[in-house]
Length: 559
Picture 1: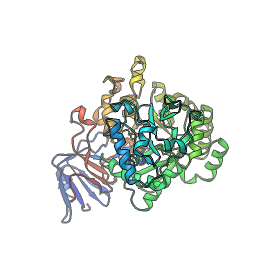
Picture 2: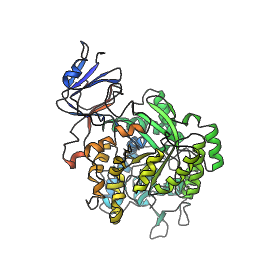
Picture 3: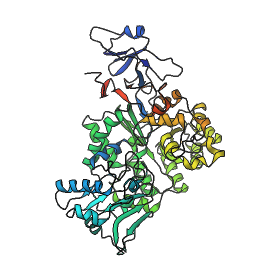
Picture 4: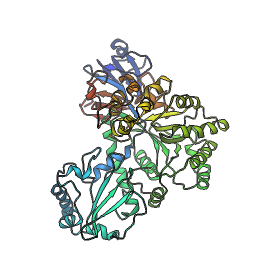
């Protein structure tokens, strides 16, 4: 047997191989797992130059695979001044004043939203005054700068979002009492004088204010997104994540940012992207699929660190919103993908074209899975889908019949348990008869489907997804939604390790710890199988390796 370069010994190694008992040690060499098992078995790979680390009983997992990561967003949050500490308008104004003191006159001051990350729940209700500052208050501390305090991004928290602007910012956008947004869900508040007071309230889940009435606000540029991605990587690695899959699609600029970092040798996350297209109609789509997306056909193309395959096709959406986002391209705001507005008829046309051109389809279905399955079944009769692993993302209600159909078509299923159950599950509690059909994780796994889970960047740690899969707890009541669908802890870990590898056809390379697999692993600060349930979501990595190389080391293990 070859000699190990590194042995992690005296631990609990959860290989995530089906039915395998935990090991005690794991040996690594050449960026791969060399051996895993008992101390004695792994010790046979030790040689004179082998480095041995005593884990002191800590748990080792395969590197986590985030099936729906939106990773590029996280670092962007650090590029703007935080208002997380603000408890009153004076706190907020102090941040704006400090920015004004170090920013050349005339340049924009743009902050993060009011509220505490990662959700920004409550917005202005977090302030003693329970309102946003008006334009006059902002003018007083930044008279020479346009100022913009954005509302929350609805995927993080819960709308409405409250934005605030000073007089310069309003004037640059020519906003007055007659301004009428071209997108719905936006309200420009008026003061006692009948003029805009600087506050705009938005009820849209994904904010459109910057694509509608605030088009002069500086967008994240390419360099911003590149720096944001660099800052995102260590945050995800600190949670044990070594691979991401962006099934919601990535816009052309987002793909270009990943490609640049990959070219520079700085992409430490195994990254799998699919294309979020910019086309507006079937004619454009036909040409793009035929002439420009050859690299994304079949299983896609790329290398162990960056690969691109398939397309995202949206279902539903607002036409005015989709048009506004397309006008702003390459800017996609916080989304990172291109907004859609498709009727089921449009979805059908795009999906048929994709099948014809061997492009794997991904779609967020939530509660429209049955409609999507009807489309896919018709396509399957002409272009068999078996083996193509088309993906239904972000599932909500799934019936027993749906599960049978999904399995017959060979589809992949992804879930966002923390987002769907904890954050947004309250309305589902009222539907008592169908609770067991809402995100039925246990039923999906028991049907033999490799259900994968993602973070959706809400927050970044997949251990929140693991906790939500076990507890199924809704945040406002503490009640469990469909408790019969709760997973065991080991099953929940399967959804963020082994099963995620199936999304990228890499189940023979990652997701488990076995000889020949990538040396992607995480040494955890607590045992996820025994830590108190309330602490399960806070588990972090002390050491994270990608290809045997440390990408996170908070404990100084490899110093």
